[in-house]
Amino acid sequence: MAADFLHAEVAILRRVAAVCLAVIALSATEASAQRLHRYTVAIDAELTTLNVRACFDGAPPPYLVAESLDASLALMEARVESTRRRIEPSGSISLKTVPDGGCILYAANVSRPIKQHDRTGGKIQHVGADLLTSVGLWLWRPDTLGPDEDIEITFLLPEGISVSAPWTPAATAPERAVFRIGRGSWDWPASVAFGRFKEREVRVGGARLRLSVLDGSPPADVDQMQAWIADAAQTVADLYGKFPLAQAQILIVPGARGHEPTPRAYVVRGGSPAAHFFINQRRPIREFYDDWTAVHELSHLLLPYVGSEDAWVSEGVATYYQNVLRARGGRMTVLEAWERLHSGFLRGMDSAPGMTLAQATESMYRGGTHMRVYWEGAAMILIADVRLRQLTAGKQSMDTALAALNECCNSTERAWSGRELFDKLDEITGTAVFRELYDQHVASKDFPDLTQAYRALGITASGRSIELAPQAREKQLRDAIMDTGVLVISEIPDM
Image (cartoon, rainbow, N blue to C red):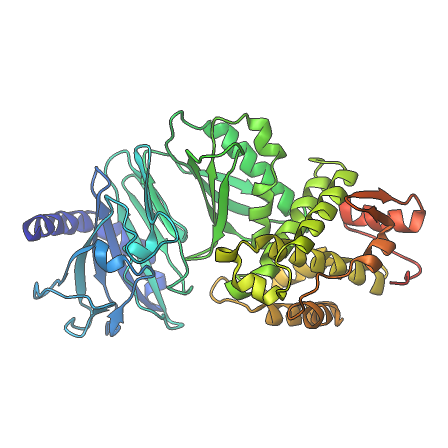
């Protein structure tokens, strides 16, 4: 293995020399203003091994860490470049023998799944002829970066192989792609894909979404997938006239089992936000447009990252807007949207009895309490939306609050707590709507009482059925939520 590693090392150095002038020209101005650590990552044509050269600007950090507990199992070998001295990892890679401005070389095996410690899912997945791998298995990096530091990663690729990465692109050329990783947390999950796909740009609402559709049998129709993602992203962008991020990685992974078009999907925040959709490519394309999943996942990007202990915030916003935005976009009628919200609230009421919202959220990923988390969060957002519109005669709403939040607080470098985010929304709106909801419901075992909100909206519920009152004032408020989101009320209705 050592001989193979050293042979790969020589190949890396030759390729690094070939691109050195281009990289220096690209980043000379930025490098003069900050410490720029440079990683070069080469993958073999069989997509089995990543050979990494990590070089440090100035004094190296004391050690390097990786997000996954199984990273040390994927690590084949690590050495100090100048001395060829082997480094033995012990939960981290010590750099105490690396000189200032020095480099290390290491290799990671990505040929097979490794789940000895981490049971959360496939950190290495072969998708047809392509490879989807968790960054946490192979990227050993400093646990913190100072305000004057960044990491630049250059991928050296075999002929015909592309890479999809979550970080901000700095340059792209045949057989080479360069990214800046930024100062997001090292322990936030992220994924990189390698394969014979062609990354496409989806320009929506001022954003650049970098879409890659991985291999499948049968293959997914890439043009149809691009149109579907563009439609969902535009639906979200219509909330306040632009997509909430300037750029994002979008991965579509065929081969998911299930009768739905998108049996599984999620947003991750490592590097920068990314959305991953695991699809059943055999389903007809109309089912993708009728499904709520894409709008739900992209609606997560309306918020900065909220820690998992307060997932009811992010899931509540996404669950509320998956219905509101799809009604506004004509994917369902207004009545259908209210019916789906009401049906969801009932499911939330029946979930996790005897638990507080905080307890249900804490056990969501192991205790089957996600219905309570999603739908109680959505109920709180509906109540907030109604109260904001009433208190401000329609001048403010969840729409305007989220637009202002995006302007002030869309940094991808830290996590927010639910209380902190709700306090910021109160500051933005000049109200106490969100703190009151937080204090009333997060530590409560009772599902929010929707009686007052339903009365203001003219919604009468009888079991699982609802009726919408025709009166002008209530209809006007309902239409404002499910139509343009703009409403001016001359008289504030009672709650």
